[in-house]
Length: 325
Image (tube, one colour):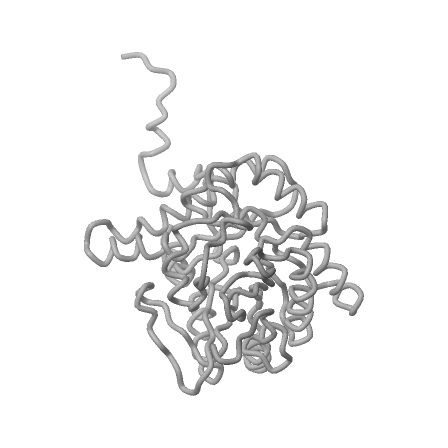
């Protein structure tokens, strides 16, 4: 048979396949999310997320060393305060001696890892919503902005390298950018959760961070997962307000959204492989239902869709896969 074009010729060896590989994942593009909690000498397994833990501040150096030893240079901090300290407006979120603020100081004293902080109020409010509530239970957008800005500022003052608002309030990037700039933190970038969907894939995170709302749900501020044009609108707004990185969350179930947002902005795109996506893959691998390299394949899909940055609980594992790829 006389075939001029034989694509299989470029698949005949691993060296040749690697030479023409279109999509590559670098460990420097990964961010590892971490949960920090009150208490002493705490390394508490998260039952809904096998292999993940809540760490007390005094053991964070141990946790961070595990991350950096894998080659990962970026972490994202989520704080879990004492519930009795939470109030209606989430005051512990911006306390100078708050859980995240102390965690940043502890890590910075002993490591040069790059710290991004989640800026939201759901872990810090007594009602579990991401903002201040009106009397009828509606999350008041504009009243929440000032608290979010104070929280971001407190993180920057503690030494955070980047802040990441995840609340989905309208105008929060502007509020945070103005507050940071007015206080001399013009070099602290904002990674905005721009297209954050109201997703069932967040289920395990609710247990990890004890952040489920007491009443109602978050569909009044997180995005409807039926929509993609709305994601483009949200991304454009955050871009215009000064976000330095645009995020899509979740990742694996929203590859189409990542790809379309990527087409509309020159800003770097981040994607968050969330707790439910992690747990499904982790459980399937642990049960022997899929090979372990499905983890790497899934993250290549996120990268192929257009993500420049990937937040993932698999970051430490991926360091090994990347070395082998």
